[in-house]
Image (cartoon, rainbow, N blue to C red):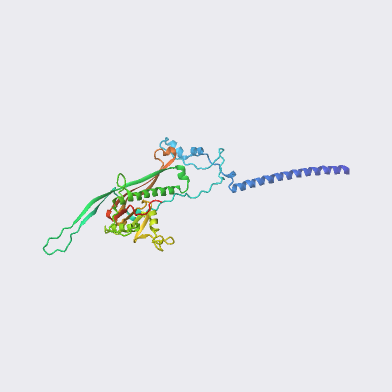
Amino acid sequence: MNTEQLIARLNEQHTSVMARFQEGADAAASMQSRLFAVEQTLAAGRGGGPMFRPRAATWGGQVGESDRLKQFVAEGLRGSCRIPITASITTPTGVEQRDLVAPERGPIQGLPQQILTVRDLIGAVPTTSNLIQYVRQVSRTNNAAPVADGEEKPESDLGFELAEAPVRTIAHWIPVPRQTFEDVAGLGAVIDSELTFGLRLAEEAQCLLGDGTGQNLLGLIPQALPFDPPFDIADENPLDRVLQAIVQAQQSRLPVDAVVVNDITWAQLISTKDDEGRYIAGASGGPFGSIPGLLWQVRVLPTPSLGRGEALVGSFRLGARLHDRLQVEVLASSEDRDNFVKNMITVRAEERVALSVRVPSAFVFVDELGVPTTG
């Protein structure tokens, strides 16, 4: 083999080696690309990506595989069977969409509630009966006097009557979609609060204004004495009328412990000015002072439960009493009427209560204090 043939042979081998080297380099590059793709996929799985999440069973699949359904079938399909379903949002193809951005939802803002006062004023005791009977004194004739030895003693007289206070039921209910009841955080607590407030608001109205007919309580105002000033005051104003009512109620010989007055009327009373435009409430009750809570040294409780210009004065703690047969009870049921087919929940609240007014003369109702009732 001459020199030229040797050089040609070496060139052929070199070309072959370089071709094989290039094939190896291309294979290595392809492998590196595949490894990079695998690393990205693994990283996505560690970060919560959808690739490595188990695909959720469809609702039908969960029902079909449910142990409860199998037991229900084995027992002959009698009664009803509740099968819990694991909720997940899916597209029609079954791919889960758990990475959807959820809206931020704050707590439920309910409507403001009126401050209730009468129950706390009167006080309540439990009872196990559906009728409260009590004997109250209605008259006193006192003929006690000094008597000489051997003389006939004078006779006094006391009058009594049997009074009754039947227990009445106060109740209401609302329908709530089951999905709303279960899904909205805090909704159950709001419903409890609203239903309880509704009962207490109706109870306060009954304690003040109930006329005793039908299923109504016999309230304080229908049993109270009508306003009849025991004395006259020159240049009488609304504040004087409150004082006259206090003195009238005190003739029952029970201490007056509260004046319940309409809240707007109370604002009118404390904004009363003298002839020189100065607030008569003084430094402690003017626009730059604390609102006075006393009128003629008696506690004042403003409330919208009374009408404009009205006030009830009395010995609430000693003159009357609430009797709780059933404290406020809130119940929820899915079996009311057609709730099952409509997927609704009925939420009901009720209480059973009686009101006994032991000393009606300890209360005086003023139906017109003499303040403007419009505007």
